[in-house]
Image 1 (cartoon, rainbow, N blue to C red):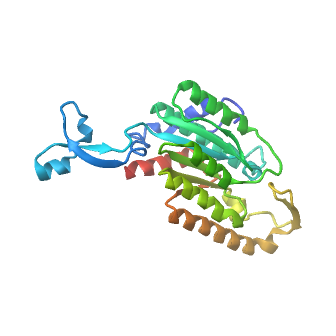
Image 2 (image 1 turned 30 degrees about the vertical axis):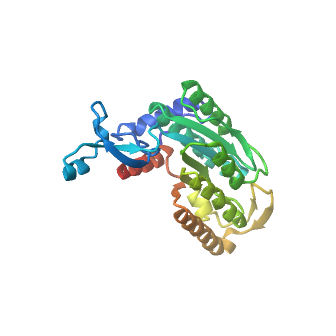
Length: 300
């Protein structure tokens, strides 16, 4: 794994190292074209960029036409990071937490966006939005956003619930132009709040934003429920509720209910045309980003 230096060190430098690790393998901008939508053709005028010529139309009509787009600007991207208490799992100095993973991944995406002269915004939320920035492309703005993420690397809080629905509604209100919205969350909200959450995502989609969800989970303990066969006291990081039990007593039931919950999230994402990127904390940050960006690159 590339993350060899302490996460409390310079996050900007760490993000640059992550980006340098895979940028060579990407032959064109992984985000190019996300923020433009084809509208119509017009006749070619001398001086127009040749890359916008529709050669298929030329083959049929023997005339040069240029594709026109609804929004011919660079990408606008808002990174939305869940900082609720459950994102601090696992609390193990030898392992990267879900929040630390999100901060490094988000900072790495900021480095990519900065390279492309794109505009970025950042939103941090738990029970409410605690930080939200404007969408800008200045170098000083990128340093400010990275600094906000740096503050969260060692962030600890107790009993901070997840209220992604309210946060996403606020993001939808603030992002006035069509943008790419990238959400980093473990989606550990109450099951009864899922409809509200996806109503907020529908708000984003209604405003023509593209939404990508990095769904971050610890595969060993949260999915497979792998614990030693001895008594444990489990603590809900968001409510503080405690329960003492032997893992083997509920393992099968837990796995079944967790799989059902994940399938519901996956189905909802498919229904609302949200790209869900399943992230296991055992995977290196750079490998997750490389696989995702390479996939998006092939789709363009």
